Image (cartoon, rainbow, N blue to C red; front, side, top):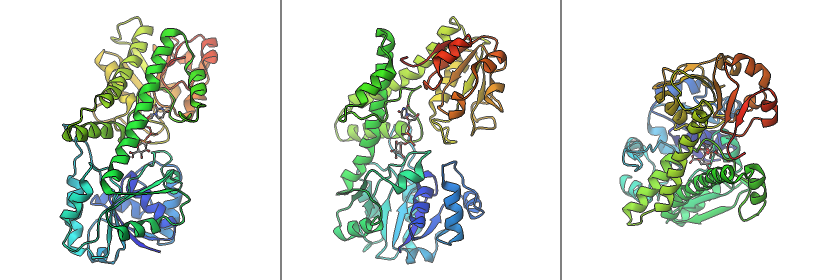
Length: 425
Ligand code: UGA
């Protein structure tokens, strides 16, 4: 059993804390957001995540997890401190390290010399060294241990990772961190800090590349009359390519891919490499938002002024309440700018969104469609594919549907009189 402190209780922090607490460790969670900590003490999670509420309840009952909003002498009793604070994107695409600096500043007065600092926040290459320099003299080496969990399946991904990456120049520190994961059945890659930090960016950049590629192929499929589903099934069966992450959509988004691809371009630039390849990956993604918009405009014969569009889905993907950098909102913004009225439904968005006050947030998929000229599906929530086309059509002024996630059954919707447009199908 280890005593672990987790600093920054967002997606990665809370999942990490609960993951380690459920594996027999004692975990102290620290976040400067007092309201968040107070809610967590009451068992209320700040995020929607499968299996998280149950784990929060069981770990709290077992006293294997505690929450606090301050740094105090208990820090000195910890074996490990895991940094999970946010590193948002600066205006110029670089990562903002101010929360990391602030966390180090706050914990340093209480730090025991044997405590190992682990970074899980996605930090620019070279940050581990910078953090070491910020720590009091004589502190243990800092270990980079990036996280690869996905929102929506965060707990599962944490407990069953494809690999564990441990980056350290200090063999003892690396061995102690590897020990933390001794009952995880996953391969461990031991490396230096700069490589560990780069692995995280490269993994996200590669996944984003795969998605931009498949969205570009969907556009090509439409042009040549190919079927994207048959195509990705066949191509994905090649073990060298793999079937995962080949689902075309409205473009990729979320709190990680846009930020990490931009940051990797900046990191490369700072080291004298023009990552034009990755710039194209981002550009293709931007084009995808416009391509979906054009599909809507195409079905409504050009002008969207005063047209009513029902939008199903606002989050950046299903099974989350996260709207950060959501492709759905990028497309909604393009529609609003063209004068369209939007009524939207999302299972986890129940009130008006900041900067999107003109969007009517409906209470059900069917209510969103009332008098709509077109239905646009932007997030792959299962409930959307279960709707009955004819019941939806009865609510609408016109039977048009743009399915940017390819989750609806085209024959069913066409049978109900809809003009259907998907992505590459
Ligand atoms: C991503 C990575 O998948 C995680 O491995 C990583 O740990 C995380 O970022 C992070 O850096 O913290 P996440 O942002 O939660 O995880 O979401 P993904 O499931 O990767 O989806 C990203 C975007 O790609 C979403 O907009 C999603 O809708 C889109 N997507 C994904 C597709 O359009 N098609 C697919 O086949 C898969």
